[in-house]
Length: 126
Image (cartoon, rainbow, N blue to C red; front, side):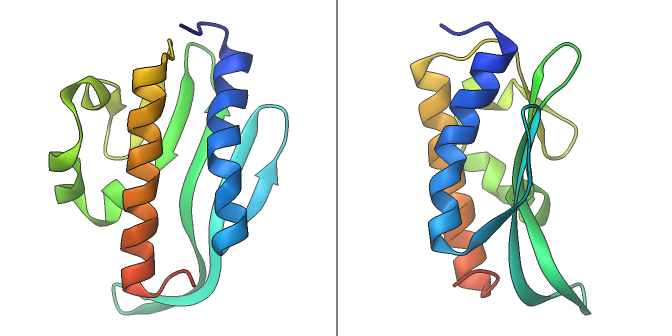
């Protein structure tokens, strides 16, 4: 069980980094924040946008925040998540992580895989 925020941040960032090889770019990559974006031109709510946010991890004051846009875009995606993961969801798309174990990390990895699948289906990533 990891409780050190820096260690939690680094662990989650490491699970996100392989997505750079499949179409996302890291617009932010520092010691306290990491963001992944699709750089394709996308159509969202009738508006063309150059790029679309996928996910980020940041060290906040009392938690590590995992921001995950696919659950904002498709809220019903949350119905497939384990209740242990959902208890960390604050607001529409931010998960507050204070302790990270293998089970929770595995749930985050599964969520990212589903989010990637959604973005691929929408044509937001190659």
